[in-house]
Image 1 (cartoon, rainbow, N blue to C red):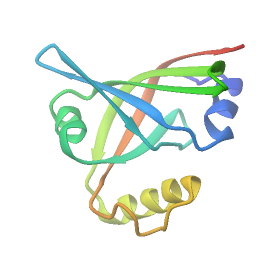
Image 2: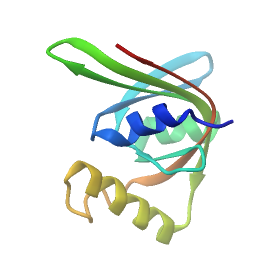
Image 3: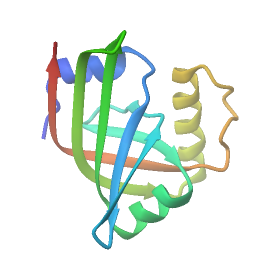
Image 4: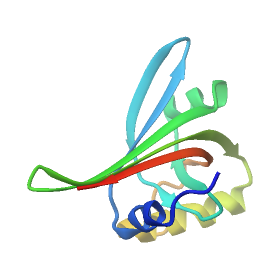
Length: 128
């Protein structure tokens, strides 16, 4: 699946919060995450806790990103995909650095978080 170029541009445009949707035992869980579009139709997040345990049990996820101005939606991108937990610490360190840089955090922040790579299967977007 190829993410449309316009959706890629939107995902890379500003440091917005994304919402990650997971589901285990038919119980949805949605939580905010920092993310980075990693090219090749993949998104990187680093996370821990319930989000991580849910991904380990059921790798099918959704990610939604939306930009607003004064409560008015400018654009939104929704991605459906398969998440893979990456246990390689060097890859995780590099991903944390890239994500923290995007959001203006220190490169060592969130050192306990685990890298999750989401391979996008479908994408939709809308601009307003």
